[in-house]
Image (tube, rainbow, N blue to C red; front, top):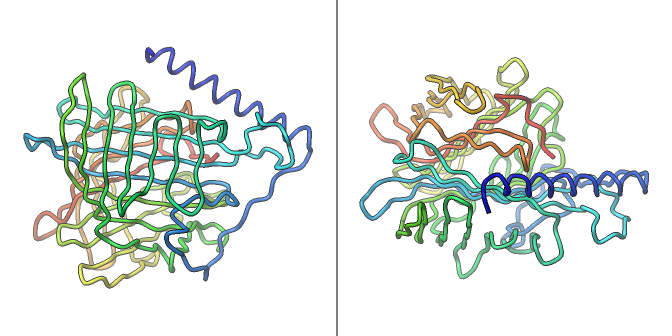
Length: 366
């Protein structure tokens, strides 16, 4: 399918899903209810690796660095979103969009000078899309992410590239915030349930430009669910997940308001010895450095950063500047999701991924 017709197909799917949702809500005249996130609820594994359909929005987010046989680096992203768009729960129609599944994938190749991006959207059901409870198993057509035998299997076939990856667990899940309760604003209700699995060992194959080759590397998985992620004062976030060179892990984020100033921040650090520390907002500082302007959207992205997380201070530099993803056909957002290197005062600190949202226009979670 050509890029033009693929874009048209995605747009039609999105419009149909939204039309069904609106029609269902209009007929029933009542809004669905969603569960709230509260502190003090312990995460349970493996059950919490599956879907939480009582919450409005959820995602499984895998990012990482790959190495080609010749040693050249690649970055990759595989993301599945599950969202309830607001259809009346009592609407009996099989075509009502009670739940949508959205998938994004990207491949950052310095040889091309920009990242390649793919996306899909569909109503859950009909054997085409869905997310299982109790275990990681989410799929949209022939795209999937599933857990099996101590590892995750990811398969993506986008128009310009394909990924077939096995991600082996070598670290335990890392609950973020307070035992998995991750606050996203001053109000306690603006929060998510959130854990990461850092240090995943990757093997598999990448296909690009008609050629397929074996790859290996390291990845990071985020799983997060919420019904009230951003409050009315928030327009977007800057997020970082780092696999540290010494075997530790660092997650850090800040939420920005309309003036671009920090509205909230949080983070979690796990040292090599397994000790974990959660950061308060005042312990985190994101200072943007060099910027890159997208020739497609005109958005001015800060692609280099200086960051302080507690006693850790380091700079970030991107694998390549152009790691912009335009997902307006599925989530309505343009974001920058890129492979980055971290460097501290003593030298290389680690590698990971940086995500920037809300720079072109305020982010709206659907």
